Image (cartoon, rainbow, N blue to C red):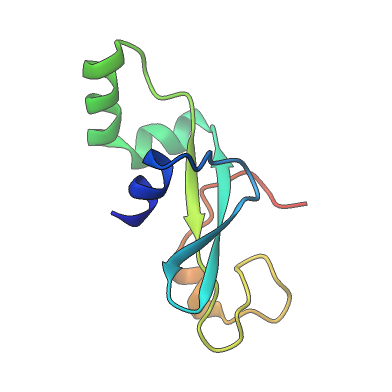
Length: 96
């Protein structure tokens, strides 16, 4: 997967980071999530795998958020299509 490849080549994810080459013609944004409830609800097998490899639970993760194809707006942008919001529920901490 492209983001794994980029990380293997040195990309360090951080909150708000713009990530290129995931979607043709668009950048995606990394958003941090550390909510215990969200981690438990959405990362089932990932938590299990992480725990088997590192003997600790997941403390947080990055949600990779993409913009709408029509106008390039992200879910937190004013005027974004409701379809863009509905297709990728906000698991991340609020955007300033």
